[in-house]
Length: 249
Image (tube, one colour):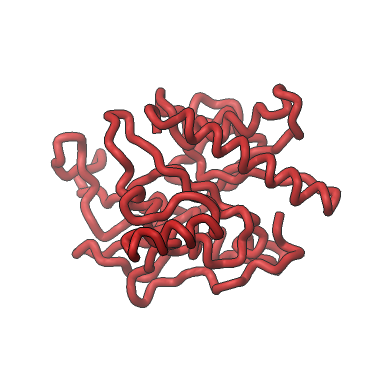
């Protein structure tokens, strides 16, 4: 995202402005929810969260930023690992893939007792020993899609998903949340570049923009580009058109 940040920043500001307009009619504000990413020392999802958090400093409506993350990344408020953009966070039980956790050299890691460690499922679908999705969701997606909070599911209160580039987990989440096919007015994809200047793998498959403009891009691409991505067979996705007008927040 580093080298493509000016485009991401411009699209993000426009996305925030559209959120402001939609909520002004209802007399409410809106909240940005991330999945707990911290500072990577480069432009990333953390930069997006910080940008939204500081909108009030630029004369725009103040927007609270919160996160949902597995307890693999637990951090106490005020500690070095707590995301500085967040005014609140929700941690839940993390799940592991049935695959070995590897070190930077690609070698399996072991814990202090010498027992082989499993790779954490930071999002998307949990995998079996062959790398195939099991149908289970990793946390935080299980909390958003499946868990109930006072009888409500967070998936039904998503007004839009802002995606800028991304890798394998992001691709699974695009499919899981049925991006631009679930009745959310704020779903948008922004092409982005990695730190080394390479394009995100999603740039090759996802049309950019909101649904209306993406539909045109898909048609012009001859089917090369898509509105959303397909989930693996047997894996859960949010129901189509599940977001009612009263939930667009």
